[in-house]
View 1 (cartoon, rainbow, N blue to C red):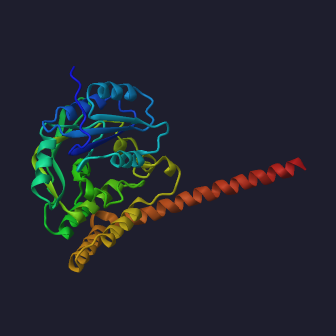
View 2: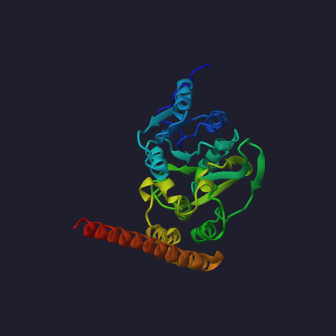
View 3: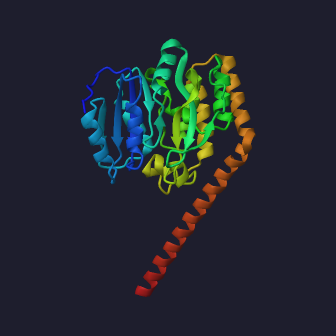
Length: 320
């Protein structure tokens, strides 16, 4: 096999954070290397995998110099790993790619063309085909958000108020625009917050074809853990901590509006969209549930401390 040479100034950097991805990693890499647009680099950051992931990565790196592989000795969580690959990016455009997803061959070509043609576009993506573990199509996702609007408030409204699975976070993004955001935060749901911030900074382009392939499987992070338990997936340091994901979402949305330079009228409309978010889809109830859940955790902790204190007191008395 002819070894592909490396370009030190690629147009696109593709960051592939991975942890124990042996089952689907080859298919993900093959779909990247089959792209018609070939001026890219692939940065793989291995979060201390204990399966065959390192061997697979080194095998592909040996045949294609566009692939860089970094292995870490400690699993620092998905958020850290996502941000780490971005820190190594050299391209004008950047794309995250999950180890279990795939692309049709024209995905990069169409996304790069859209970004090259339209300076106001911050992120380019396509429609999505969702597949099962064996690659069989389950359904196509065709929900249309008004993220191509010239008005930041309309883009922000749809990104926070219309239910969607955040597939766009795997789009091709202008690197300089992405640097203006806090990237992926170590909390749930920081991918949704990032998309809202990007929507405030620029329009999104969506190719009409289903060029992005999202795989559903039992070990997927969104299926393997409940909402609050996923906080430890983003950052292992969150294990056992009291988290309030919906209050955190509200706080981050407010922060995003405040930190984005917007005309006063647009900022007011964004706050109006945020009020809509609170009122719609029972988010007000979810905010209340955050408080109830936190109170229960605090109560359980207090009971454990009281029991531990009583046990210590009894032990001391028995020793006298």
